[in-house]
Amino acid sequence: MWTVRRLILALALAAAAASAAPGAPGFAQTCDTPSGFAVPRFVSLAYDEAAGRAGPSADHPIRWMYVRRGLPVEIIAETPDWRRVRDPDGELVWMHRRLLSGRRAVAAREPAALRARPDEDASMIAEIEPGAFLWLERCRGGWCRLEADGRRGWAPASAFWGVYGEEAEPSLTLEGARDPCYRSAVQTAQPDPAAQDASPAR
Image (cartoon, rainbow, N blue to C red):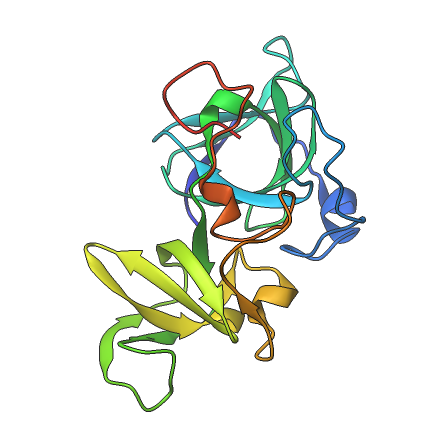
């Protein structure tokens, strides 16, 4: 579905991918990390080409070459310079932190409508097709505010990969001040203090 990567080495990671459902944390969230940010957490690719390697160094072979800036991925482990990430298909690779942006994005898993307000009766701005990528601004009450091609609106959080269960929960409002390690669209706008370049590497 995602058609955003080129196979370099045909090394299957089926067992690892099956151990945790895509987008669902496979272990408890922690902030005791080299970056100081929560693990797991969602980020996105900062460049049009990003190498996903077999291990946390440039000496490891490339397993996948990703060719889509803004692709949402989930960081599930990290070292000071490398991030273990899961892509929307469940594949696991290592990426250098400079290849990643703290700006969050989502991938549509099913058809959805982008609406003017977080309400099923609100006017529709655009139709969202499965496989579409949109920038995530924030979530509240089971809805997420998204942006794509200059259009902004709201869509059900449950329709997207790149959103955690608590963000899709209708009874919660995920906005405003939170614990410094809290996973949210607001929190991920902060730059990584370990980053050395201008992009918000995560």
